[in-house]
Amino acid sequence: FAPNTITVSAIAADTVVCANNASINVLGTVTGATGGVWSTNGTGSFNNPFALNAIYTPSAFDTANGSVTLTLSSTGNGLCNPVTDNVTVTIKPAPNVNAGPNQTICSNSTAPLNGIIFNETTTGIWSGSGTGSFFPNNTSLNAIYLPSNLDTASGALTLALISTNNGDCNAVSDNMTLNFTPTPDVNAGPDQIVCAEFSFANLSASIYGATNTGIWTTSGTGTFSPSDTALNTTYNLSPADTVAGSVTLVLTSTNNGICDTVTDTLIISVIYETPIVVAGPDQIVCGNNANVSLSGFVSTGTTTGIWTTSGSGTFLPTDTSLNATYIPSNTDTSAGLVQLTLTATNSCPVIDVLDVI
Image (cartoon, rainbow, N blue to C red):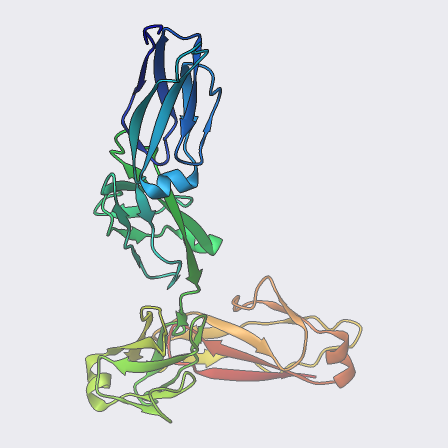
């Protein structure tokens, strides 16, 4: 009998590998035989099973099992039986990263995040395709994302959560989409000036976007007619409002859905001096020389006014010039009569009218 002098040694550079970085370098030695061959109890593959120093790539089945046994068997054994040696490699799970579900928020809101990371690591970092910021920081899994104006204007962005401190695993990431709905746009209208003897202001507001409803409130004690939920309503100043000299009205959006409320403010100022407004005498002009030279006069409490026409002509240089020139349109001259009205501005809306024939 010939003595059995075959020895086989199979080792792996790492006996524990990560599922997403699991290529295994195996180092084998064979003495007393001409070579060796690698085999596995799993379903992965060797880059060259006949190379003593080979690379084994686990299959999904191997990683799911959590381990795989690699066997080196001697070849070219002569009269002897093959000799084998085994190495068992443990395959630990890769980091599991969940950025959370997609979200839809209002353009004036923030996004609470709820990231989850487990297995090899529990830490991560957020990044985004937008220009917003993370509070308190981008390494907090439960951070709050604060969108920028550019973010909300784009309508949507992508946030990515990436694992950190991964050990010998590769980093893992997960994405979520953040969508934006338009914020309510609230316009209470311009500030107004009213005369004490009138004691009311006609309001004309608009709300659009996420809602088209709102409610009026006042810093005074007046009332809204027909109601405080009508966008186009009348505010009736109380005696206390008039004595105070001004009152602030606030229009607040309602039925906002996922959006925060939005407000807009206007101030009603009360004046006690009734302005004097003189549009000038009526005028007669010729159809082929119909330009009308105006000489308006406004005094007492204000010196400004604005011209309007019952026709379709134009005022030069502007309709706010008291000494403007009115250029009748062809329609005006065909009609044979146009009325020009001068209204005091920055004061009680006192008017005076002149006829142009």
